[in-house]
Image 1 (cartoon, one colour):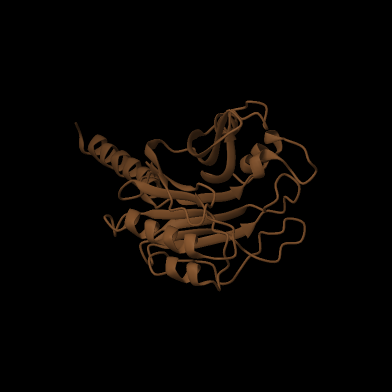
Image 2 (tube, rainbow, N blue to C red; image 1 turned 120 degrees about the vertical axis):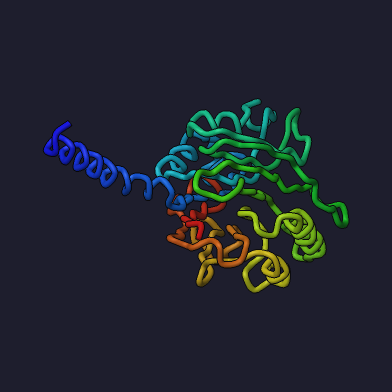
Length: 266
């Protein structure tokens, strides 16, 4: 090979490396994770119609990566024996898991998670019941999300709605029990907490979780929201950066508005 050919080969190699470097850097950047939480009221809107298609349409439009759903039904009489988690997964092109907390009309009632990332594992942990309350639980889902140092654990839950907060306090203790073995792992807590940011229960949760919002974004009542009771919390401390947060303007498909948070792992 003469000197000219050698220089050409060297230049070509350098150009290839320079072309590839930005793409390598992009591939290694932490992902912007779009997380949505929504209490679906079993798919029945304030217009009295059962309509999963309009729910799925909103999920697709905001390009959610991970969706925490509450008040979801599977094969119940009230919702026409439809497997709602599976149907929403099909309509959104996402994987799904369901955590049943209550036997209801021939099927199950509980929480669900949709994900466009692989679901590594999941289990449903029942929550304590106080004074004959409704059986409730937290669906714990482990997700393989590219760019994160280890699998991300999502806790999807729906806490007791009664004014007395004894049951919600016990549930906050369960959340701590679930996360304490992995203090440095990426984790998210999403759902209908049935309490406000000023409440004692919310402050109990903030001993172990971080609320990245700068203030409340009301989610209920759906027509003219006055209070935020639907939340997305993160841990560990200062490892997630908030890129955006918004309450969707959908005011018919459910009796709650959905909360969308765009997060970046630091």
